[in-house]
Amino acid sequence: MASCTYRPGWRVWLSDEDRGQHSRGLTLIVLAVTPDSYAPHADIRVRHLFPVPPAAYDRASWQRWLFEQFLLVERHECMEFFTIDSIKPYAPNHGPGHDPYVVRELTSDQARRTNFRGEVQPS
Image (cartoon, rainbow, N blue to C red; front, side, top):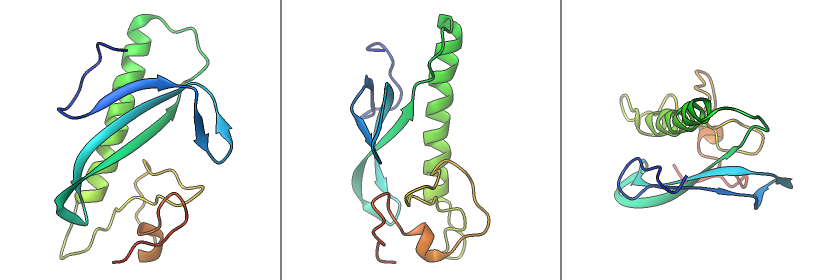
């Protein structure tokens, strides 16, 4: 894992810390430093947490799984930044219980602005 790199400023590691919502287990953490999609003049640090499957994969399978997690982060960032007429139609839902990597066509503005702690961000 220590030799895995992706974008400048991004870090990746394994942890068994609490993932939140009283969920614990081996977790892949991707720390992404990226412009804030709602305030592009400022960078933000975002931690993406992925439960590691309890599997006895070979190296090629683990490598592919790791690559797929980076693709999920990229999909998430694409949903954050994609804008038409000042509207982010695919902004990810970050609220409790939502999968922030699923592209949703129909959702409320409030759902798109709610973070993982259930706090509604200003529009």
